[in-house]
Amino acid sequence: MKTYIASFLGAFIGCVMCGTAMVSAQTTTASPDTTPSMEVRRIGLADLNGVLRAADANVKVRELLDVQRQKFQSEFSKVESELQQTERDLMSKRELLSAEEYDKQIKAFQARVTRLQQDIQKQRQSIDNAYQKAQSDIRAEAISVITEIASEMQLDLVLQRDSSLIFLPHLNISEEVLKRLNERTKNARIEIEVQKPQSQ
Image 1 (cartoon, rainbow, N blue to C red):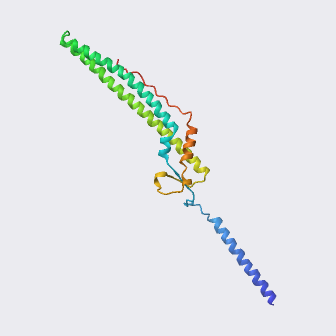
Image 2: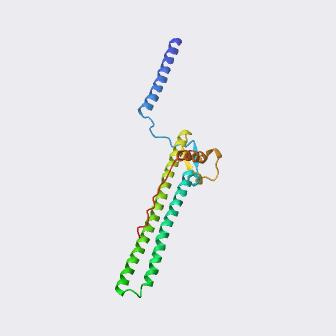
């Protein structure tokens, strides 16, 4: 009798345990936790602005733009010199020309000066736009490098270096970012054609 009761209790407990396990499994299967975890385990830091300033590509961009600015200045200096000579010639002819003819030449001269000023503004804007575009491209490439490194290191979050006061040195990935950015952009070029002044 005792053996029978013991066997019955054992079977009953076993069924209860199996049933509990099955309910637990069914519950997990029926209601999976699809909410992504918000836990951050691995963090990296990157001095993006510092990387951009030190990047070889940025140095090249500045050098190329400096060359273009010098060409720009040289071309417009020639035109400016010609206009100054034209103005002197007009002043010397003032007594020799009729008032109508003198006024006509003065207006033509003023129109040339206005066109020169417009050309200068356009060329400066063109150079500024080219610099901003180059900066934007380099920045986008740097962010791509940071994303790549974060994936390789399995980082959950990458913060700006300036957002942290104290941190462990190994968390700073800026040096690796700069190294890879320089490698990717070592053949990068920027070409800006500075047109000759039209105020001739």
